[in-house]
Length: 473
Image (spheres, rainbow, N blue to C red):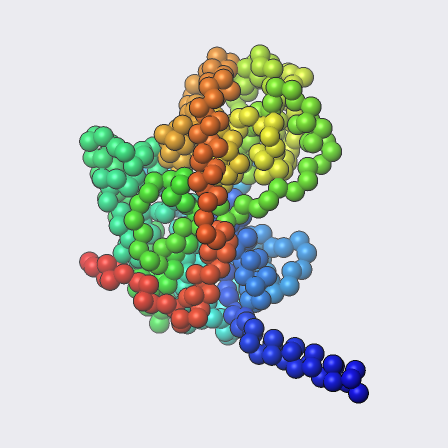
């Protein structure tokens, strides 16, 4: 009898737990059509986090999961278009001007719109009449995909995997005063002299107008072709975006005002390092004088360095007592000194977190520099295109990086830059201070993002977050 009462008591407790701790899972569509893996890193972590919370997510991307994941369904874009942004050679991007970079982005955006929306899997998906509670999409030359929010009549959340794009701020009514907010593609900080502020202001106008009339007009045409003529103007859909998650943090970048609908979640992809493989652990642990780590990320191929620049790097490394880890995409490297180890892939977070790593040689991409900042590793940065010059300028101003111009790479310049960072303790001290500030927050970046996404779902779009400044002409 006592045993029976116990069983009923436990059933009663279990019922109460289910009733009072119930979590409503939402159906969420993620639209991430950019074919660069570096962009999808943040998006993937976010969507996996939502799936782990019990939400059912459907993800449109070029990077389907290799193994089935609970609550996570892929709609793969593999084969929809040639991947023109992965594994770029250095001669394709070296010396590019900001406006040439913008033209490439504009052109790629339109090509991607047509290729993605015409892809058979997307056509089939659009005809399926599924229901979604929320649409999340990347804000990066993706205007034509705003039609998904209208198609499914769902609130829209935008995600920026980089510093906020100049053309993406008006939809939120977010301030972008060029007197102290640098344009994305210029190597300016928030502390500009008069000439830099003037150049910043002059550049902002054609960048916005160019995007509006070159990309916006064509995006409208492509969107209507696939979503139908009943589609409202894309600008109208954009201005109703409920939330904007931005991959920045005020401890790293410029402290600037954001309206309530814009939330910084910089470092969302960062996780605690895993155990290193024996190969890398032995190399790092045995480095008496420390290790220099060189990687140009997932987009640029460092094996495309021109011969004279590659030799300049190697000759500088040969003069140093430190060991060097170099992410090198080819099987072999001619003239490689004994202190240099190459590999096609390296566990970057695990390497940067190792106490023996003294310097990170980087192209200045946002993900890599953010990882170095998180683990307090100073940098020698070789910016090439896009946001890299602004990123590097920011970290140089914080005293945690030395800039090395690509055109000036030689044995002497590389050796000098590395000696500066290795021998001046201020770089390491500043990097550790930045790391402490970057880590000090009430919630992790991922938990912050998930909280605000669920806030939008709970409040049916949370339109009270929206600033009326978005309605100003």
